[in-house]
Amino acid sequence: MTALTVVIPAFNEESGIAEIAERVLATRESLLKAGVAELELLVIDDGSADKTAHIAGGIAGVHLIQHLQNKGYGAALKTGFNRARGDLIGFLDADGTYPPEYFPQLCTVAMNGAELVIGTRMAGADSRMPVTRRAGNIFFARLLSLVGRHQVTDSASGMRVFRRQILDRLYPLPDGLNLTPVMSTRAIHEGIQVAEVPIPYSERVGRSKLSVVHDGSLFLRSMLWTVLQYNPVRVFGLLGLVGISIGLLCVLALVFMRLSGITVLTSWDVIALYAGTVAGMVGVNLFMLGILFNYLVALFRGRPVEQGMFGKPLLAVPLDRHFGWLGITSILIGLSIAIIASLLGIRGWDMGRLWLYGLASAMLILLGVELVIFWLVMRVLDELNTQAVRETWLAGSPKYDGVGGVNRDG
Image 1 (cartoon, rainbow, N blue to C red):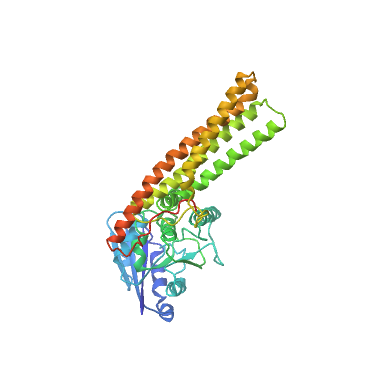
Image 2: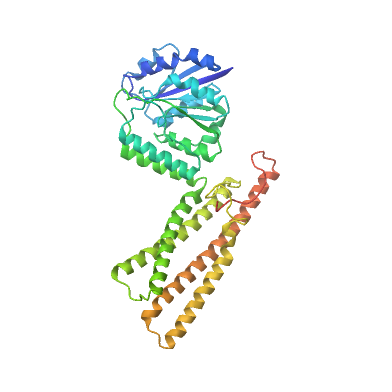
């Protein structure tokens, strides 16, 4: 039969720790019906200055573990994870916001295929979450769904159950309140089977320790940094496509104006041209940097990164393999335009009619040089990655399949 360890991190929670601990212990019968034969409850007192440890230590069935100094929410949870004996590990906050009565449901899902089960507050029938926190959680869930290509409704929920054997794949995890969004992000990118169970959410007992601005920005940084450790092109590529799109709109507008006979630009036209040119070049660089960083991730991890921008290749040959000839073509077109513009200038054309040709020539040459440079760097990294994967495969590691190459562009 399955055993469940529930970890409760507690820091100055004397007003609510007794109630939540008793509610967890009261789930034994319903857990048994769900197929969980044993319940272990660990309360991690994270250096509390009040009576939290005294109260928790006096409750029969509670195993109290104390930090002499406050180390953080995530650090307290990791202490509990390391001391847990159950096949399944669950956790929830000590403030009474999460319903421990839903642990049997989460365990049932975990025992039927899921590796990480999240109690989602955003799909629950009864949620008393403040408006600002609800808006923030919706934003982070949408962000993770976008960068991880996996639908998530609550990326930062503090009530979860997961299988003990996936801990190695979830680590490293931070020591702060950002443990939950980082856990969600790593789980998705590690290919862990994630499921969600709707739960109600209540007002907390005592004063909240969460700062909407400070912790919200921490969550955002943590999620993006975690994604960059797995699939950088998903972030840089999407940002790059935005810049490229702005640049292309600028080019189309200029062509339309020229075909309409407009050769003199107003001040706003010049500003728009400048912004579009910068956005386009920055977009191209971000897109190529994303692909380059995917090579580096693959190299340092010693295995192919089968992620890409869109989860599967859009082309039979990865886009970056075309950077070489695309760059050379761009350089040749740029030089050709420059030669033609120079000849037209010699023949007496006014510079007011030739400035656009000069701008187009310079941008194409610069773009071509960048493409060729990136192509050369990526070919070297690809060869190094292929060698690293081959060596790992020859060493007999079951973790890798020995197939080289990286899915860079989707």
